[in-house]
Image (cartoon, rainbow, N blue to C red; front, side, top):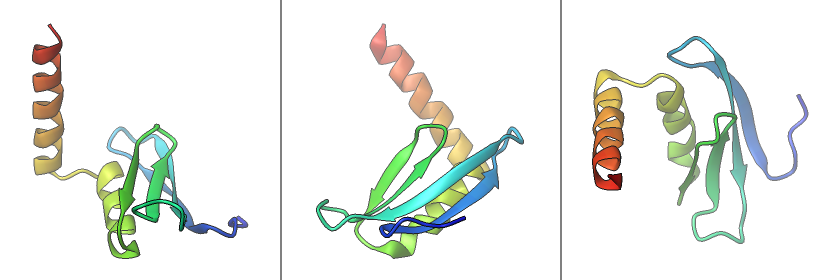
Length: 83
């Protein structure tokens, strides 16, 4: 796979449901936080340094129990406040 000039890496992970998720890390000097990852599921996240890009993309597709608990609590609170 050939990366664009601003792409750091691209990888395919298998998420907790077993479906493949392609994650691409990019660098853009015009943004306040120049490093970002984008997932094919639509999730994105920005970082000030490149150090946290790969671990965060990995945890997105391979969440720990604590990550799943946080996600569940966020969805629950979002649902309750939307009512």
